[in-house]
Image (cartoon, rainbow, N blue to C red; front, side, top):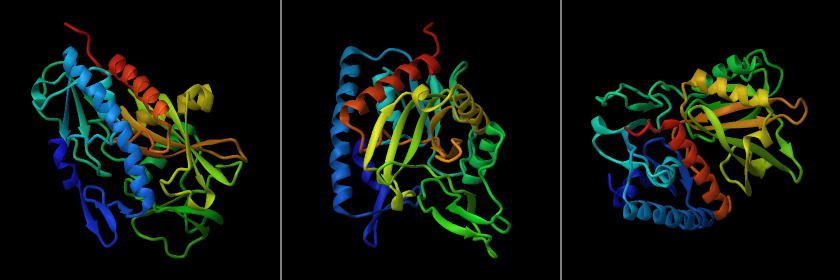
Length: 312
């Protein structure tokens, strides 16, 4: 689908922009206008990479997506262009075929592909919050989820759906949990300045490559409205054992490419993986342009090294 049809992904709905695929609502505010402008600066830079690759001539590998194609605001879009990967429509001829669908649960039937093609994310069928919690508990050996009918104290209620950003803190136990919601440990990830910090880890072939330190006010902890984002290295954010936990988690989720949200509890020091996304957007809007470019280059290098088959 061509770039000029991006707007068909959205529609106006009662004072907000509705993403048709996921149902996510984006309020129409001045902040949104600023985010769009900021994103466009990165888009222009990414387009320059894309044009340069066309001028110099694409080499192998080729990549195709199924059932959907990513738009430019998904991280895979600039990464594939920077890596020199050529986007083609014919799935049966692509060297790399990536399963790409924003839905929480997906039908990952493999289309007809050529022999030796690298399949990405086709084994990752479910990124619901319950699935994430179960995979994390297997990988880490301690619990994220709680039973809301017996748990005493503060906990988090979230939608099972991808990209809902509807979490809220409740006091347990609850007599009537809400259907379609999941309940988790409240991780105290507050840092100095009245902010909370998420450690967004981007994966290639199930291993951490870059980390975005995403910071927002405590009272807006569940919203994707960052006041500061810093680019960092996995080894600066996680111990060796925690990196192993993230890799085991990715293996449990069958997540080859994507992003996982990690929170560090300031009291216990424990790391929790609370979300996973196989259609990762990024880099975050609040990140400086220079850091966006560095993060994209790092991801592109890892993408080419770990996913591209050897030239014949």
